[in-house]
Image 1 (cartoon, rainbow, N blue to C red):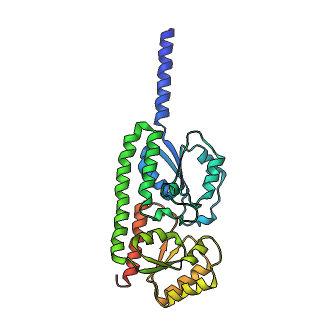
Image 2: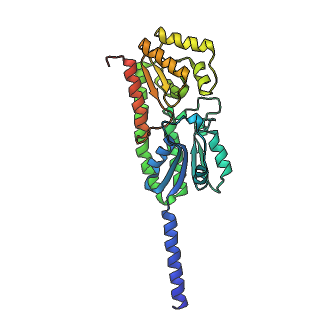
Image 3: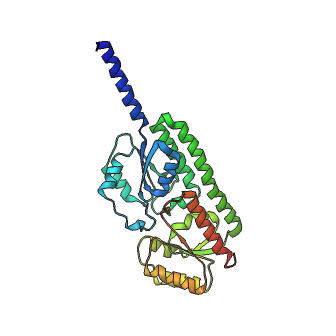
Length: 291
């Protein structure tokens, strides 16, 4: 083979290698599966998305990392975490597995939230559209060849997320000012969006922080249930304790509707379907037994 032909063959090989590299999906790791689900909807076939916390039966507060998680994170070009001290282990992992040029999307920063605020940001209907936009921007910069595809999928995702905002707005018109209570502040930001009057918040914060609620707070909570000062009890079914179960039992005996919510997105369900399902369950509970 002549020198010229060798150069042509070498250039062609480089071209094929470059095309293969360009075709490789962008690697994104999300701390929680609700952010991962949105990322996958926007990334489509052009992104490889992994969610670290994805088991709806797991207590998120008891999560422990593993070597496989560290390896997965080491290859990630984009990382999404909740922030506001909800997933502090993620920040430690990012520091332990650095990668040049990696984009880190901290959703709490997007929403102007800090440690001490309610960290369950995904329950605020305003959060996911902002997170989706940030994810689409990061994917477009990491993979400019598919930027138009990411933009198109973003618009479809935003249209789906708008359904959650519309449903929350409709329930606000119907139930604003209605008193409810909860064992933890998981659903708190959605309850706020719906305009519900949330009671027993000091009890909820104690439970979230894994501390013992005061006897006064427990008594006030039980009194609310027994004397129908609230229209529904919301509880996090991923976290069980004797205190929580006692409150559920009291609510059932007093015929106060009990609504289960989760911190982690259920398997085989989109984020919007998850939120809409819980809003429907809430609406049914507040509407009474004949709804």
